[in-house]
Structures are given as C-alpha cells and as structure tokens.
Image 1: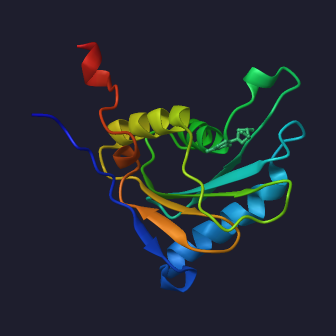
Image 2: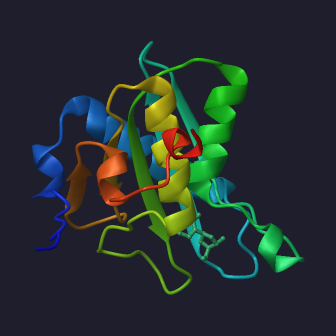
Length: 159
Ligand code: THU
C-alpha cells in the first residue's frame, strides 16, 4: 500500500497556444527587462491574466542581502492581490532569461512559489493555469498550479 503521485503537464509548441496564452507569454517576456537580478544574473518574469482580462506582471527582485530577494511569481501574486483584491487569476505565464543567453527549456516555479500559488488557488477556488516557457522552445501547460505541489500544506490543515 502506498501512493504514487503524478503531475499532469501538457507539452505543446508555441503555435499551439491560444491567442490569449501567447499574449500572456509575450507580456511576461517583455517584462524580463524589469527584473532586478544583478546577483544571480537570472531574470524571471511572470504575467497573470485576471478574470476581467487585465494582465499584471511581476519580476524577480533581488537584494544585496541575498535572502531578501523575491521571485517573480510571488511579486505578481502580491501585486494582483494588492491592486485588485479578490481578483481571480485565470492563467499565469512564467519565463526567464539566464545570463548565458536565452533558454529553451520551460522553468517550473520554485517550491516557495508553488506554496504561494496553492494559497492563491484556495483563495480564488477556481483553477489557476500555468504557461511555462523560455524565450524559445516548447511550452508546459499546467491546468492548475496546485497540481505542482501534491500533498500541499493548506489553510484547512490549520483547523
Ligand atoms: N527565481 C524566480 O523569480 N522564480 C523562479 O521560479 C525560480 C527562481 C529567481 C530567484 C532569484 O532571483 C533568481 O531567480 C535565481 O534563483
């Protein structure tokens, strides 16, 4: 007896994205220049589409005191909840640019961001899709960000 957990991810080419998904990914790529990543040289950007159609971006913001740095995904989530409280995020695109030049493999959010994405899913109840891609190459589509963190610690665990 045991558990064997699987994470469903769809791998698609960029041309297979919907127009909205492509636009979201393009907005994220456009926001890469707003990253503040002088220490790692690794720029990351996230773009969230809200239910009302608005797109909100976030980028990683590093600090000379290294642990203070915050990931692009959590900057985007905090911005959404600060400027549009109660908003529903339909989809979030995440992209990155390493110092070595454009990447080709999608980036999956770090563990801390997965936990933050689970919290957002709990808050909004509806699924929060992810569009993960480098500046070129294939795209990973995750139907619901919570799928990336099986056995997550959630608010109901506090009961
Ligand atoms: N980073 C993100 O912004 N998102 C991720 O999903 C992975 C990592 C940032 C944190 C740090 O500023 C840099 O990338 C290198 O780890």
